Every structure is written in C-alpha cells, then in structure tokens.
Image (cartoon, rainbow, N blue to C red; front, side, top):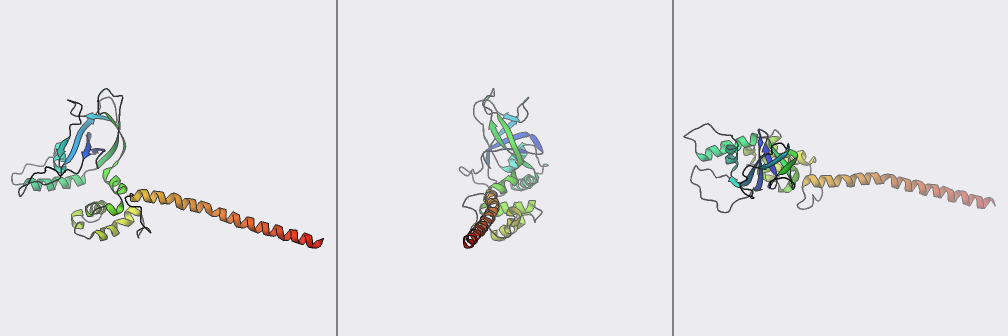
Length: 243
C-alpha cells in the first residue's frame, strides 16, 4: 500500500513511508537457500521533537526522501526483530520465520499531511490511524482480492492458517469470505461497478434504499388525495341531482 505512512504497534517510535511496493526490475538471481522476498521501497521517519503527531525524516542530509530497498524480513530486522543466532539456519529459512513474525504484528496505517510551514522539508502530520490489514480488505474491490489476501483475512477471523488456505480454490475462499466482508450470502445482482471497492459500493447502495423507503409515503398520500377528490365529485353530482 504505497503512498501511506506505517508504524508497528510494537515499535511506535519508528515510522516508514511506502514509496513503492512492487519492485521487480534489476532483481538478482538467488541461489538455493537464499532469501527471495520482494523488496519494498520505503523511507524512514521519526517523531518530530516538541510536535506530537508529526514526523520528519531520519536522514536529513539533503532534500530527498532517501529511500531504502528492504524485504519484509529485512524491515523487521531493521526495527529490532532479530532472530537468535543459528549458524545452521539459511537466509531463506530466516526469511520465512520473520514473515511469520510480521503476520503477528499490528501494522498501523496513517494518512500524511505535509506541513508546508515547517522549518525543514518533509515534515508530516499523521492522521486517520487504523489497522492496515483491515483497511486493505475494505478498500480493494472484492473480486480483486487474491487467494493470499483472502486466506490472510480468513486466518485473522479465526479460520485455518493462511498457508493451508492457499491450496484451496479461489471461488471457495470467496464464498467463505463474502458473508464476513459483504454481509450477504450471495453476490449482489449485477455486482458493484468494475473497479469499485466493495465497501464503497455497499455504502452507495444504502442511501438509495433509504430514499426509496422515504418515498413510500408519497404514494400513500397520492392515493388518499385521489380518494378525497372522488368523494368530492360524488357529493357535487348529488347536489346537482337535488336541484
């Protein structure tokens, strides 16, 4: 999720900004037993002294963001999640252990507002804190959620370990996750517009239903007025007959 600021709840003093999360170009070949995790491009920030809720760059030697290229495992090591020394452990095995540790972390996501009047460059106020994984499944269109994303979501809901669910068919994972995410047993008729997040589609549908319900009394009033007019015409005709 690039373009946002993040913190691990266990290390609140360390903030990082994701510049890019899909780095493939220039990736070197890895030998057997070597780590193969995809790298993130990120910039580290720290709390700005005397200004709660604001952060500034850790490296401030020039005007750039000073990005680092790190895998998830390397990121955890950087913030202090070190493994006990084991000369028999390969880097690939260490990477798997650290990725499992990442799944146990409470990753918090923030929006960043640039402070244009700050005395230095790249000072941001952090707002809208929430769990990053919760936001991800809410914002991505349901039909775009991958097997890995759905398996992780179900695992967080008390389901089987995600690595077990990866072997299941995508349709099966969607059927299990849909009631938990969308609140309905069956896909909505026609589905949400292409590319529209499911949470947003549901929110848009609610006002329409509300407006429809609100419009119901109008039909009742119209019928009542029609009956009243009919009775008035009948009384008028009766008066003419009396004359």
